Length: 322
Ligand SMILES: NC(=O)c1ccc[n+]([C@@H]2O[C@H](COP(=O)([O-])OP(=O)(O)OC[C@H]3O[C@@H](n4cnc5c(N)ncnc54)[C@H](OP(=O)(O)O)[C@@H]3O)[C@@H](O)[C@H]2O)c1
Image (cartoon, rainbow, N blue to C red; front, side, top):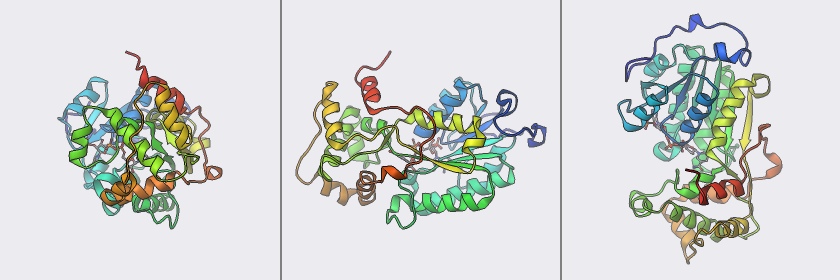
């Protein structure tokens, strides 16, 4: 284990040169997980640990509470910043694969792309053999969506880089209905922090105000991010140099409203101006939510996994297992 805040220094030269996926337990010995203290990276950490894979977590706060929790799970924690490619390269030493996510809601598109370039540069230097990049559902040329601009460009550069890759494009997280990563202003986050379900009531209200109740909303459970990454590392022949859309379910807006209430949750909030309010407050999020509900299902390329259905997620949410 590296000292807190220090990158591990296991030499890449000691790694056997077998193709990825074979005898995984002996040689996918270390995966660097960027964003391990967050939603997606956290899911990846749990899935890889469950599969017996060594995990190294990158964080800007190696002494923080979340980093400590990761250490207790047996994760090697290293300090680093996506804005510092040299440190990132050191963090990658001895890792065969890397999971990378950037947080658009914190960075905006330009810094998101700069961070993605840091990952590419460091992965090339460290001769990483499988880079899994988390993008977003709906990424395409000329989408007109600010929230997907950096991800689109990063995907292009990843493909051109020559680094063996897999792109995953998660849909709206089911956990967003519990406030997981909805980018709310601080005051709203504070007001809603005591009742995570309030975020779901608000989100369903917004989606309902954005168009007809028959529109479908593609959703993905966070646990499926980790499952897909674990599968991709284990099945290189099927996953390398491909992109997968992560959509476990796509209920209609009407289904969302009724299923939410069917499990005993309070009805969605709906009031005049709810959608306009979001457009004024976060036009990028409003545009993204609108686009998600119109994304063409025929274009999805799903991984060959059983992804979580909305009803199953809801049941777990209404009756959490303790
Ligand atoms: N919400 C959705 O429905 C949805 C759906 C599809 C895609 N997405 C995309 O998901 C992304 C957010 O993912 P998330 O929800 O997993 O984020 P998150 O929970 O907010 O976590 C962000 C992670 O990134 C790390 N990080 C941030 N800046 C860093 C830096 N400069 N250097 C190193 N690490 C850094 C943080 O680590 P430390 O703080 O420990 O350093 C943290 O672990 C966004 O880009 C969004 O567009 C979201």
